[in-house]
Image (cartoon, rainbow, N blue to C red; front, top):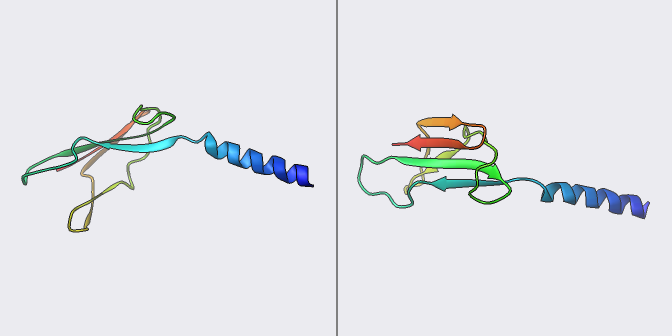
Amino acid sequence: MKKLLTAAMLALFSQASLAHTLWVMPSHFVLSGEDTWISVDLSAANMTFVADKGVSPDNLSLVFPDGSRHKFSQIYQGKRKSQADHQ
């Protein structure tokens, strides 16, 4: 029984270690002015900032300095990476 439990735990943890890491890379970190655009690349990959798998940007939102949340105005989900834009 102990061996079976150990094997099950190893299988469970090894699956988690093989999962892809999600990353989000904005085009800008500091914005000034009223009429500015921000673009965000989004992907899941084994290596950070190397596009591998496109993920759904539907639940992605911007958090403004006042704490309000806004949806991106344009989104695109590709095979290797996704992108979202907001003005």
